[in-house]
Amino acid sequence: MAPEPGTDSPATIEQGIAYTHAPDVWAMGFTGQGIVVADGDTGFRWDHNAIKPHYRGWNASTASHDYNWHDSVHSGGGVCGPNSPQPCDDNGHGTHTMGTSIGDDGGGNQIGMASGAKCIGCRNMNQGVGTPASYMECFEFFLAPYRVNGTPAQGDPSKAPDITTNSWECPSTEGCSATTLQATVEAQRAAGIMCVVAAQNSGPSCSTVQNPPGIYDAAYSIGALNNGTDTIASFSSRGPVTADGSMRLKPDLAAPGTDVRSSYSTSTNSYAFLSGTSMATPHVAGAVALLWSAHPELQNDIPATEEVLNSSAHHILSNSCDSGPPATPNNTFGNGRLDILAAVNQGQTLQLTSAASVKTQGAQTFGIPLPLSGAPGVECRSSRSQETLLFTFSDSVVSGNARLTSGSGRVSGTSFSGNTMTVSLTRVSDVQKLTVLLSGVTNNAAQVLADTSVSMNVLSGDTNGDKTVDTTDVNLTKSEVGMPVMSANFREDVRVDGAVNSGDVKLVLGAVGHSVP
Image (tube, rainbow, N blue to C red; front, side, top):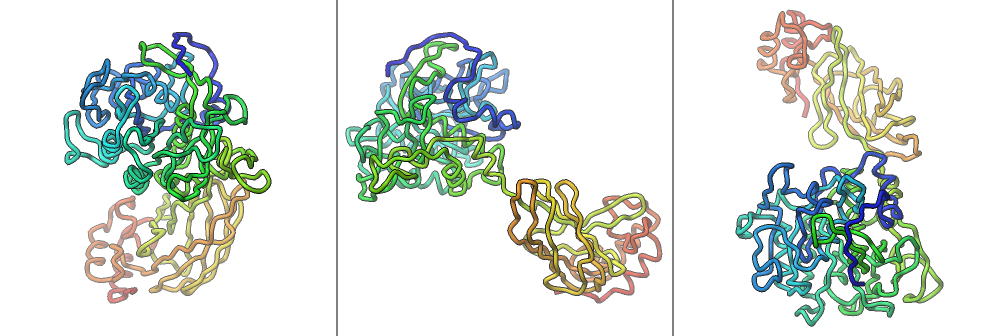
């Protein structure tokens, strides 16, 4: 569809943004914070009012395009010319797709899914036409961005984006075969970069998802819905993929893709209505930014992210390009319509975030961290046969069980408060390793933590936590005698009475020679 540029500023959120429930996620406080979305396209107008505040190269006073922009067009380039040193769009398409992923001018044009995210970009097409080399050059830049006029050897992987949005295809007329970009796209996935791509606009026939990168298993391919409905756009390509003989189901997901209003490159406040799987794709790229800001544990975990998006989608039955009765997933809608609110809600998984052995020493309580993996922490303070373990979770917990699976002692009680579970132990002997198994820990949403074990070494007097009581521990304790107990020296208060004194030194001396494996 030809663009219809304009400068109007409606007071409503764009239809596709609302239809995929992004505003409900914003209301939860998640707008894509901490996530970087990269757009490989015809370039983008970085100073557009709806893009500039979200461009990683803009700090509210000056612009730096180093690591944030690359131009893989080295001849021609239309109005931008070749090798543009700053973001430029020679077509308008890239400015539009960028806006749908992150755009918001703060004044009524809420055109993007994730305005809290930052964006970078790379021009991979010369006036709408690319080559295998130009596409691969942008993907290479995204793996390890470098300075303007720099080289890949100077790339910095720490500046890589989290997500790439790719509203383009590479047909044979541009020089691509089925395998041309496969290794390049797989490298993105291996690096933890979510590669969201258009399923192409060759529908309504089946097996029209036929060109890279939309055909690849490593790419998350997006079909187009008629905006505001759960009907497929006639132009949206269908699977299965026959180009490589895989018969792979595509697309993976569908999102609004007709009459989508977004930023346009004509001016800093121009907008246009465009249609295509190109317009559907950045809806999903922005949605991933929302999901990852809400669930950092999913960030850069591509298989887990895809599973959440797929299973939370609004399933739409079809068999037009599949055998058997209407079902989901299918080769028309994939797993269905993007529903980012459902994804965020489903993505909430109960996790154990920390554990500690806690004791009250005088007027304060101090905890010795117990690592959730690797070598156990060492509780060096005299237990008097009692220990208190504090477990902290990613959400409020209301019930659960604890038992010792190794070591001497017994669980005498459990209690719950907010995100914490307290486990009380009695009859705990010194000089041992004990392990507590948590099972059935449940939050208010009835999510249950997978059975989890945490271990602790009990070794009174081992003030430096090296699993052996020796003269080093004696000297550490002597050096703190008479000092107030605080976070820097609470381990030397081995008798747990709120003071470091000769009694602590005597206890450590008596334990010299004790050790745990």
